[in-house]
Image (tube, rainbow, N blue to C red; front, side):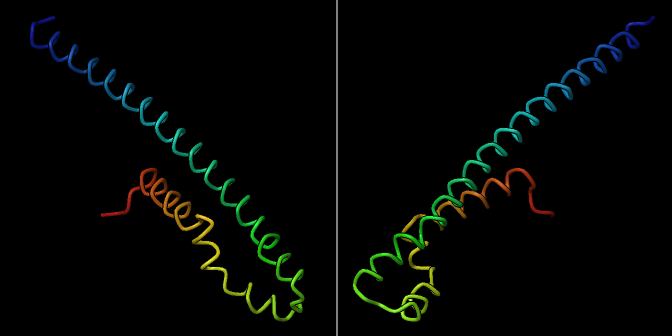
Length: 104
């Protein structure tokens, strides 16, 4: 085997190692982002599940009717923002962008 052939073989092996290493690192990064995303989704679900309880019960205690409460609860955007759901949604979107970049 000539010097050029052995050098080419060494470069091919180095490239394969680099591809394998990069693939492993990318797989670990995606797995970590998926884990973080799932944690955020779980947190989001917990916060959303709690909204009706804390938003509705005090209103019932002061004598509001179900229709009055329903009218107030229909627009949850303010309550969601105060509960931090907008930040959670932003975090989820950022993780999604990192896992699947937007097409060029």
